[in-house]
Image (cartoon, rainbow, N blue to C red; front, side, top):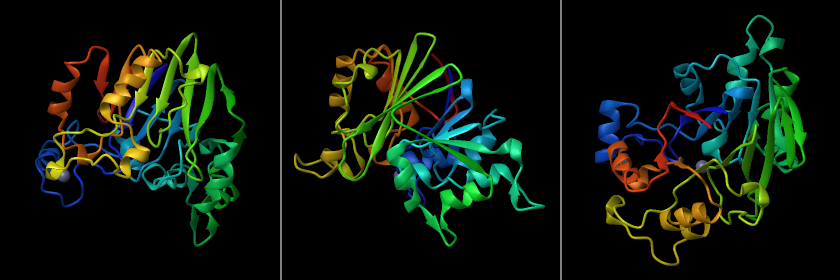
Length: 282
Ligand SMILES: [Zn+2]
Ligand SMILES: [Zn+2]
């Protein structure tokens, strides 16, 4: 499988708007790989885009991608869906205000998200309805598993009450990628599908030290209910026997620059930190 990490940042991009911290100043000066846009990846084998942060139009234009045939979402938090209108940007024929038929994107959604996505609205009502009526997308909902060409996709829900999130497992020709970018706690590690991936793409979770403002997360901090720590994430990767680990969704608040992550990954064999535009072959 051939992948591109389009955006390696988290719910806060780097540079964070107006922020004058060391990491953001350096990113503003040097750009990528020091700068990080919101979370999004692309699977070239089937032209599948996963998640659309606010910066997605720029990310696509910066890439070599020529077609988006499929789009899916891990969950519907704003940092993953703000750029959903990219389907209109791609498909709109300005003469008719309808879509070029050949540019229509198939929105591939687990059933549970298919219901929830109607909460994303504009003045025209649910944007998903407007995009369908205009022909920008066609919707394909599925229950847990779907096959696209020769790629098997499994959507595993993370049990987080009303705020549903999914971990995706991609399998092709005996290779497996587990994609777990955001809101992944409690990670469904009891599931067979997530065991022994060739690549685990996951968020690193909380760093206990070296944060902005010298902050230390108290034991009862609310973020601990939604995020693992970096050490817990490393333990999790070991328990599911991930052959390689790639960290994404790298938050500005972790206060670490591209160079800091390079230094960190040299300490952990088989572990990497993503950057915007990073190509991957699995
Ligand atoms: Zn900053
Ligand atoms: Zn997120």
